[in-house]
Length: 390
Image 1 (spheres, rainbow, N blue to C red):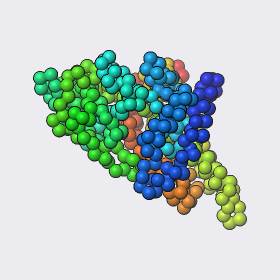
Image 2 (cartoon, rainbow, N blue to C red):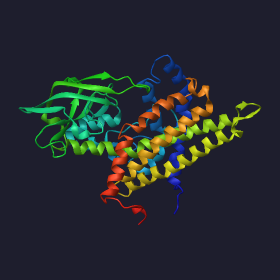
Image 3 (cartoon, rainbow, N blue to C red):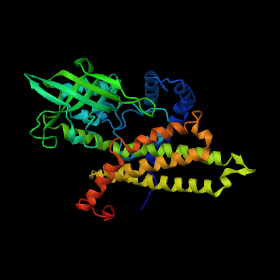
């Protein structure tokens, strides 16, 4: 088995690393200073400027089809790039992407929503989670009632990423309660903010925050149905599935960067007349972190490779998400311990990562949901032990 990267993969990874190192990381101290003053780390206009600068490097639309100006990269390359993005705590991502289910739009919708989103002229968000429907996505209540050629939406969505900034939302609503959510009773709608929904900021332990979206008799024309009536839950699951190898890919970058900081600190910080790296307690924390990091790396790359093979990636992606999210929490916790009181301050990004990575065990499928998927696949015979080696 050859675990080495191809020349193309190595070149793309190194170019992404070069951009993050030269263009994004130098902004970190200013971002920390602003956050200590309760300001956004970087303004949206500054992030946009970085995206346009990255476009000159050729990085635009990592997963976007070439016909829309994107790179249409294989999953493994996307994973490698997201690892590089994870090396900085700046909330940066390469531009030119749109929610994957927007490609189910018809031609008119693509012109109005997809293309402007890819080009960065419009901001979208995706809304399926509700106050009573998180891990149990099939329990959604937000309703859409037909009224002539329109639909009337009522209800609430919560913990919506980009919900405070988006000018339109892809929202999944119940259109036929008798059929049930999994039986074709939900539909996805493209809903402009100007149609009447509003967002409310949710304060979290991390920087920034998601939103609650409130729909009160929001009238949506029939032409704004995304996909087919009754296809909403299916589209929602396609959207959720994509993140389960990209989130832990970013976790790899965080773990690598923070662990490198711990190694450097252990080699320079002295107590009781010797460097703290000479202490076995510190050595074991570093050893455990490196071992877990490498184990996570291959779970994640295998999940991405499974996507590239056109196989069902759910089992591999669930293992990658579960292990990768826990790995980065363990590593950052040890890195803070190695840095002692300094790691707990806001002078360094460690405490920021500490808060940031805790979310990785919750969103896009909690640890418990990943364990449920993995065990169910085995117990029901959907997946065999070691089946990927058969």
